[in-house]
Amino acid sequence: MSQASIKPMRILLLGSGGREHALADAIKTSPLCAELHSAPGNAGIAQIAACHDVKAEDVSAVVALAQKLEIDFVVVGPETPLVAGVVDALAEKNILAFGPKQAAAQLEGSKAFMKDVVVAAKIPTATHEVFTDAESAKANIQKRGAPIVIKTDGLAAGKGVTVAMSLDEARNAIDEAMTDKVFAEAGAKLVIEDYMEGPEVSVFALCDGARAICLGAAQDHKRVGDGDTGPNTGGMGAYSPVRIATPEFLQDVMTRFIEPTLTEMQKRGAPYKGILYAGLMVTAQGPKLIEYNIRFGDPETQVVVPRLQTDLLELFYLAAQGKLNEAPEIKFSSHHALCVVMAAKGYPGAVEKGSIIHGLEKAAQENVKIYHAGTKLNSQNEVTANGGRVLNIIGFGADLKTAQATAYDATKQIDWPQGFYRHDIGWRELQ
Image: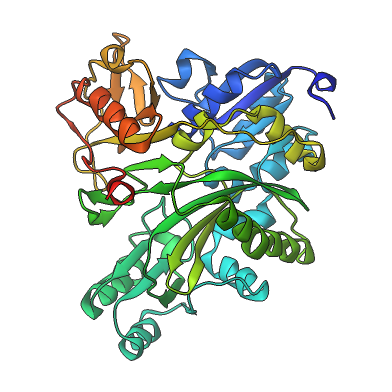
């Protein structure tokens, strides 16, 4: 299928984060995009797309909106609508969407399901056990000792994982999830697994149910504070490319992780279409799978997608059609990209919304992209904070050091006293 044979489409992009702003930016430049809509979008996406006040996870409202706008193709950014079955619901109305159907979305929707698939497919991962009551979970950690990793089975907005360095910390994590129900139903079942050590790398694969193409790699910074200290977050920054992710490494990941997963999912009658994101730990024994996500990472998308020189919308469309065999060659810019996340003070805990952000125009220098994450325009048309992670500032350069300096120079131009950011994104790679 040549690009010339695909007619320009009316696109609906679901989501409201920095990932979605990066996707919108790439989709908008495609000759296949006739019109771009977003639900709900944010203040940045609103500059390049028509935004609609519909929550991405409100499946029936999304379907109604897609019908009303006569949408040709829906691109789903976050995991929650995928786990809720938005792709299935759109398919019932003959609307094509990019992303896995509900049965395949369990790869992120249930960590216990994901582990079953991975073990069946003989993919290297940490040894684990699954628990549905606090008492037996605590007996297990007592027997196994610390450090140990406690994960909620269900979706917890990137916050359901505790890397417990002591037994007390592990017991607290079990109590939080199962007794205090901090994560509601997501924590009713826990996956407890062995602690793994080594650098982490995120690898992205574009899948059409049977085939997969590698869409690059990035390294994320999960801890809230400099030097990888403090609680885990949804991600405080990222960079791409990653030294460890050589072409040989990426080919190995595709052969030993992604392809066996697609085969196993086909066997289960749940073929996987969409982005499959492998979160890997590069241990002394080689790469092992930490988790699968069923969508692009955030903030990794913000450093991977702007480097992509192949039409992203065309790739999404071919994957959704099951026709990746017709995909053009994947090409990336030789430039490095580094993203700094500006978050509201208090994140990853409770944050105040509504503070005004100044200096965005000043920060938008050459070799810089600013993607909005949790932003909203107020009645005076000023950009305000509307979430935990609020802005992504991406610097580009011929090497990582230049990209880092560019990103931080731009970040310093932003006048937002209620925000904070890490000052060391990329530190391990630059050591």
